[in-house]
Length: 188
Length: 185
Ligand SMILES: [Zn+2]
Image (cartoon, rainbow over all chains, first blue to last red; front, side, top):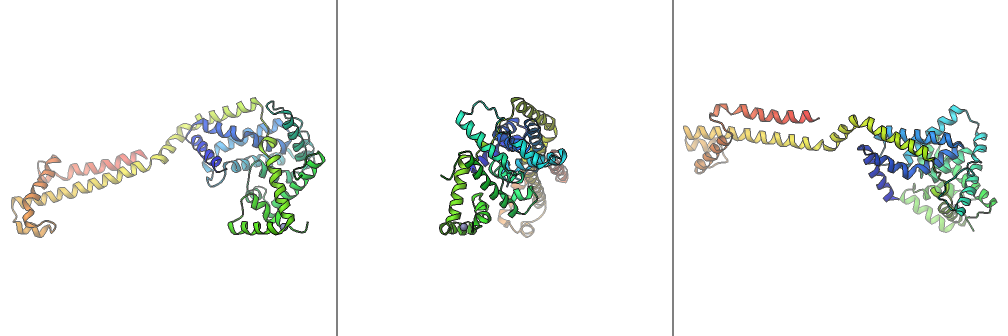
């Protein structure tokens, strides 16, 4: 984890000094995490791809303001999260609707390098994620995909840290229940 | 169900957000509370098996990848003219600063020496060894001849024919140092 943070800083410095390999390096490292988050929050591949581009370009524009004491990925997720908030606000999407569209995401991925069993696991886990209530899904994905600390999640979601922790706890409980329904048991 | 410590502390413990003493407190709670121990172990296992980038991440289309990488490249080109000098200044600002200090120090040293040399020349031409010893307590009267030679050597090395002309080239040297640095910023 520490090594990864150092590598991030190195790529970030390259990026700042005008070397585009810094940007492409960080993009390749984190695109699937950020895109997974955006796709599961919007349920629409095309919209999520637009938001992915917006998020990385916003990161480019604001690179000077990145606080190096933070994790780069958390920062990036904070930017992506703002896109999700804007999307919810402007599209006036009903939260129930989001929940519904999220359900079809798992069956839509088409990555060829995944082997079948892994593909099956992905499908089941992502079906379970889609069943989460949006605010639980949000905290869960920010934490699990973005590695964002709860303190920062609470700031991003503009709620007390205890609320963020409560949502995560519910998300974990519901995930366990949904996975069990699909024959996956992590507890044994 | 009775214990709420996993939610209050356990999640923060697992995300590395607890301070040392709070983390130790939670660890000792784990050894006493079956419920929290189970919860913590389950989450660790689930997180490692299912909640990974491999499982939860998604791959954007190659077209989206290409568009974003191109945008990144174009952004760099658009920004480089303003951005690079700023980075350069940030990175190398200590160098001109250091040079400025050196210039000021050298200027001061040379100026001091030339004044000193003028005194020596005056001593050699008219004044007595006793007077010299009084005006410059660092040199004993016996050192007068040797010190006088040093003073003359400095004057010669500066190319000064007449001791009255000394301030001009020194002033320029000093100014050059300042001008070079402020031009670099
Ligand atoms: Zn407990």
